[in-house]
Amino acid sequence: MAGWEENVRKVTPYVPGEQPKKENIIKLNTNENPYGPSPRVQAALLNVEHLRKYPDPAASLLVDKIAAYHGVDSAQVFVGVGSDDVLAMSFLAFFNGNKEILFPDITYSFYDVWAELLRIPYRKVPLDSDFRLRKEDYFSTCGGIIFPNPNAPTGIPVEPDFIEDIVKRHPEIVVIIDEAYIDFGGKTVLPLVEAYENLLVVRTFSKSRSMAGLRIGYAIGSRKLIKYLNDVKYSFNSYTLNQPSILLGAASIEDEEYFRKTIAKIVQTREWFKEALEQFGFQVLPSVSNFLFVTHPNYPAEDIFEAAKKAGIYFRHFHNDRIEEYLRITIGTDVEMQAVVDFLKNYMK
Ligand SMILES: *Cc1c(COP(=O)(O)O)cnc(C)c1O
Image (cartoon, rainbow, N blue to C red):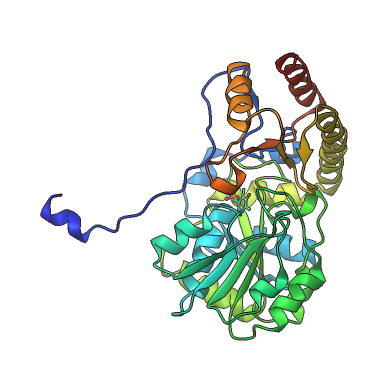
């Protein structure tokens, strides 16, 4: 190692799901939404002349729309470049103590990467044998708590009461609930942000709003939490959201009907596809997300993963001991999921 390398911040980066360059594949590996954004987003695509100036650093147009949509004050909304950016800023702003922060052993695998990057002590709390969180595990003294609801990659939700019991016990820390998949059937804890100043709820446009390519995420919390987050953001990069994101994000919020319709469609597809998988002998965790987490007693996950890939169907397989035998399958269109069924029929013959 060269001398200068000793002073380099060394990190093991997060590895996102593959984005294959190939055409005509069925891509069910990164929980993208198959329906695309609302037609209003297309209509709002801007004139390049608008790119000349810096965007509004406060992204007020989008912030105000999100606030009105959720019935909160604009001072309770923080926006960022995807929820990954919002979460990273939140780790930086709120997980600043000496005690360990807590999150599940099986969860969004970016949390430990941010903790490592920012040198935040952390402890992974094992899910129970059914891959469920146990709230008592989160009652102990700690430096902060974060988990997704529903959890990823399991898709299993907890009730708002469950989260409230945790938050109630912890006035000394910030609790972050990552609601990336909440629109697909879970129950939000947004109403609790009025009662608990230290509860931050994080959302994204990437999944339910089908805008992963644009990169918009947001957080809702007390005015104080949002102020602290903005202070960190403005100490880092004033212009996180670009002008197209601000305009197109606002256009998406305006089309509630399209949003509801496409989500209902994904939920409907998820339910028949789940039954089809069970017919093949898969065990399917009870997901309220736009993906299913599945395992088969007779077929190794890795083998199915590789065979599907050869057939042009991409699933996600995580290399983690407890879930080595599981695959995460994003819910696509009916046609795509039927192609998966046809593949499995052939594979298991
Ligand atoms: C997809 C995802 C995110 C990040 O989404 P962005 O595209 O960065 O908004 C965050 N948390 C979980 C649990 C996710 O699955």
